[in-house]
Amino acid sequence: MRESPQGEERIESPWRRDGLAGASKQSPIRRQPVSLVLARFQTFQLPQKEMGETSGPTYLGLDLSTQQLKAVVVDDELQILYEANVEFDNDLPEFRTHGGVNQKKDAPGVASAPCLMWVKALDMLLDKLRVCGVDFSKVRAISGCAQELAKITGSRAYERFSGAQIAKIWRTRPDVYANSERICLVSNFVATLLIGNYAPIDYADGSGMNLLDIHIKDWNNELLMTVGPDLRDRLGDTVPSFTNLAPIATYYVERFGFPEQCRIIAFTGDNPASLIGMRLKKGDLACSLGTSDTLFLWLDMPKTLTDGHILCNPIDNDAFMGMLCFKNGSLTRTRIRDSAAGASWQLFDELLDSTPRGNFGNLALYFDAPEILPPLVGDHRYNKADEKISRYSSKEVEVRALIEGQFIAKRAYAEDTGFVICLSFFYCFLILTIIKKK
Image (tube, rainbow, N blue to C red; front, top):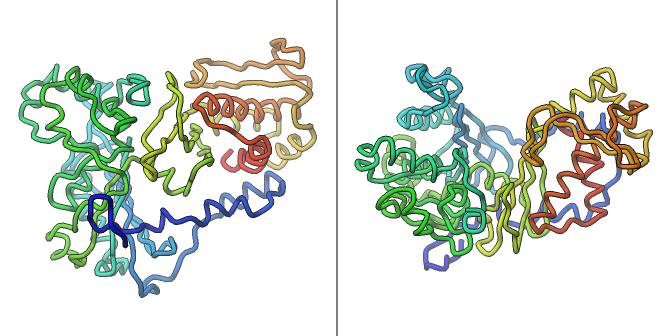
């Protein structure tokens, strides 16, 4: 432990230690067949100890997503000891949610989640962990994450962001707004339950509301007045994402056996938590490959973006976090695999290996659904003369055009944020990473 700038005792989290984040700089990266990389990815899991094996302190992490509340217990070496989850639809049917939310027939575009369901889910989750054998008396600290303008807030205005949602409540249901003592994000709502008092919003999650000035780490008064009256009092203060908030509430000490010394660390959003979990540091970039692909960037001096998001860095208050989302990810890769390689990743690998880097000047962008970056839809194939064509003459050219097109686009948008990509790093990243989650 060490003293925080405010003089409070601060727990040094194992997530903030150097180690794995710097390992890649020491180890040479060698190309492996895509099929082998995919197989290793599918079977990869963090080292796991036998239940009850640890004798030292443990740490509890909570993740409140739309459909479930998940927990993981780790030791100070980040080895997973226990895992559990509560699925809202199945485990809490009395709330009648579908996909974790309630939707009214007369308002099909509006979804809400009952907060009492989250309260009950937390108790149920802790009960499940206790049945699994978790000794709560060894838990030293708890933190977690939850679901989820440009020049000031890091993002242009979005209807789904909290600022717009609060403004809607003020305009359509002023009585509800007037009777609201505190407005919470999902992240600090869970922290509020655990400390038995209002928990502050952290910088990183707060910077995704279109209300926080990411440069001075405080609410922007002009934006607050635009959204609703007395909003600053309803939101409360903001704090660094690694703030040691308070000891755990007496309720959890008496019911579950947590030690009185167990500390609650500020909760943050799921995307900032991804940057923390990947142990990124200055100069690092991570790519989450799935139905949609997401780039996470560590930024020192970000540029203003109209597309993408700049958030406060959850680890370093002087840095920022860039986040770029690409809608057409694994489903698009699967479509080209099916058409060019007969639904075989092994053949896809062989076709990719048979063409040189640069693909003879052929490049393509494939957007099955309207893309976010750039805002286009459809298949766009170009030959070495930069002429748009309807199809390629060979399947191997099609495969490499897909892969290089997707990642050159990611590189271009990453550099627009001010991130500098080392050429050799980029190609190692391209070769070893892109196919892991086809």
